[in-house]
Length: 358
Image (cartoon, rainbow, N blue to C red; front, side):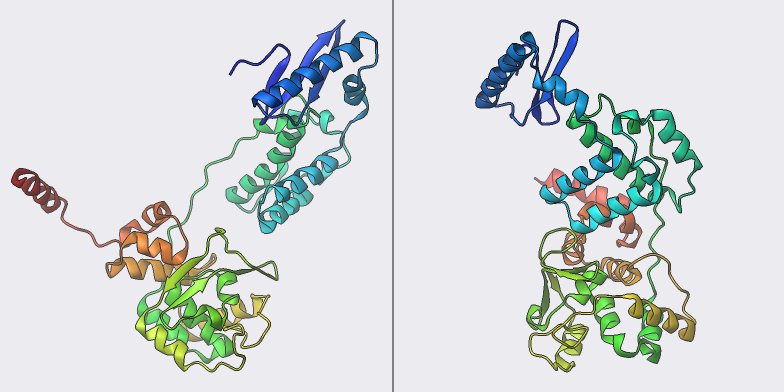
């Protein structure tokens, strides 16, 4: 769609931009590129032209007086993300990244920060991993993109910072013998139920802690909430509720479990959930030490075990993905070697036989 003179597309809305007697007049509107939005933008453009003609341009005054600091733009950007439905945990992660790495710029006008300054600071930082660096750069770029969309800056200096190559370690599932050794350890204490369910479903930590007895129908779990940064949220990581099918052994285990509070949380055994997983992690580590099973780094080692085990026994990859709340592409990308391998030659011959018989 061609736009009228001096009206531009700008990050999903329309911006008015023209020069009058050597002075640049620019205003980013909230108007969308619809018929009505374009008509409103034309009217506003004409108003700005008249104001500039008589030396009263509010837009030019705004450009001169409204200088935002990096901290101002950070707060506005994070608030904007929450309004758009971004998860609180994600926004908090961005906030932590900005405070820990880029706070040296907080008091600086956003339009005074140069590309070279950002590159120099990035080069001087020692991130735990390339993944951590990538997350911190994502937070930084977001602030400058927000500032650019609001015309506080003309260009985004953070775009000069490029992500490095990140590698994801192959999953390290436990063997069934190792799982038995871990679950037999008394060091798990009151958290044995947690790990019994974890290994039997592959669920995430927050989802496990948020499970209620009302979510169990005798054959499956209905996963519709999670513990996020110490609070129960009526949503999962993917914002999609799901049904988790259970094996017969886990069904029996759950039916035999005591239920001190009707409808309460399964893991805590009370009306309130466990919100701090650290004691559970500590118990799991002690069980490793006592059993001699090697400790796995990274989150959810039981999740890797569940996924690889289900694929190895022939469960359809899509069903596995649905059960654990993951994308089918993720299952294929990271767990392909656990799929039963078939003879490629025989597969091709069978396909040809089917084609020729039709």
